[in-house]
Amino acid sequence: MSAIQDNLSLIKQNVQELAVKYNREITLVAMSKTKPIQEIMECYQTGHLHYGENILAKIPNLYVVETIDSEKQANMLSKQLDRKMNIFLQVNTSNEENKSGIKPENLDGLVEAVLQLPNLELKGLMTIGSFDNSHSEGLNPDFQVLMNCKSRIEQKYNLKLQVSMGMSDDYEQAIHQGSTNVRVGSKIFGPRIYKK
Ligand SMILES: *Cc1c(COP(=O)(O)O)cnc(C)c1O
View 1: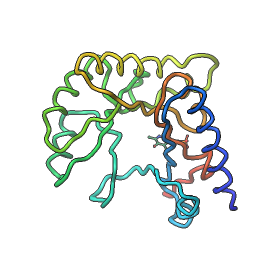
View 2: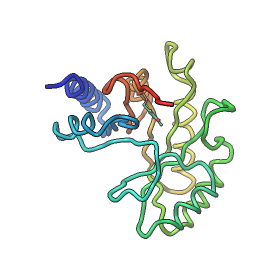
View 3: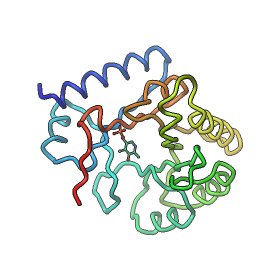
View 4: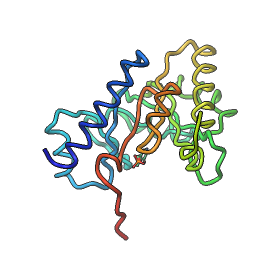
């Protein structure tokens, strides 16, 4: 096994154990963005099927888009599609200016708009959270904000939503707080090196 396959298998096992502990289905998304196809293939060979990329294009078999945070984006995506696409709405739970995501207080309006669009299937909510909150002890307040959004939206619109939160440094904490989809990059592939 390669180092990447080792990393993937350890994290998978860990996530699987937590899924049993919390009695909840959890999807591990390998954030393969910026990584060469060879490294992604190493994961694929182990049977892993979920990958995350940062670019949006007409990718055949694209399964879910997790970063919708405005009505304009939702409209544009729906128009470009010729089939149904699963989406997660990204929520800015940390209230940081530089983070994308819709503010929790504006989420309901966006949900209502998305529910009207023919090609979008609302599957869940996604957040990144602040760096500081993911590197401190105890409950992560940003994850708490997302879980509160989830409960409110589920009740108000009679939906069942997944929750995408948790990355390399905080996925265990995120699962502890209710995550159903963790997005792990550097703990599988190593640090990302961005070329200029
Ligand atoms: C890159 C990325 C991740 C993974 O980050 P790591 O800290 O490397 O695990 C998760 N979510 C999103 C949206 C990303 O772009």
